[in-house]
Length: 254
Image (cartoon, rainbow, N blue to C red; front, side):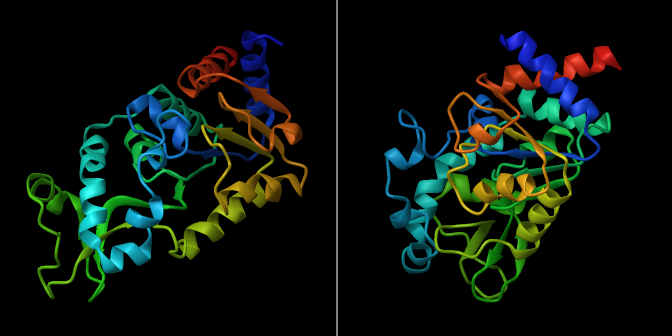
């Protein structure tokens, strides 16, 4: 099938589903200017060892290395806006054609696009927590000073270092989010995988959980994934092009 026919088929599968969910990864945010971590040409881990700057062990010993690494990324996150792929998924939810988004991303762009039922399995950058007293603060209150200086962000109450509520290497994933994602995978009858290489566990296991109940799977990604052979439909296209195309066909049919 050509891309035209593939998008029409995807729209048909979504329209006929009772409980569709989406699983998204870094590839859905790269059109918004946010770099991914693992691509061969531009992945962040090609430039730095993640265990040296983005592990919980490194953070506890040398938090300044982590903050020096994430400072330029924080500027990118702050300036990023949802792209057509985010907006398309938000539109699907508004149309009643998408129940839940499970995302591996920490950028909050799904919520900025208008999606409401979002499960963030790797945390988010909206808040930070003191590693000493566990006080939680909004990132908005910290960001301007953090971007302007090399000072470590510290808790005003006890002086402890403030860690963004993102999941670092070696850190336990948020139990509530993971359990919610697994429930969503079991409940769905269609899983739309968009912009995820499916190389990171436990998100990589969610399509297999969905398949246990006979769920149909749509993969939209420019690169192959290990679930392609089990998918009902694979679309090798930019998510920022394909997802709006699917939505347009649903709107025309409706």
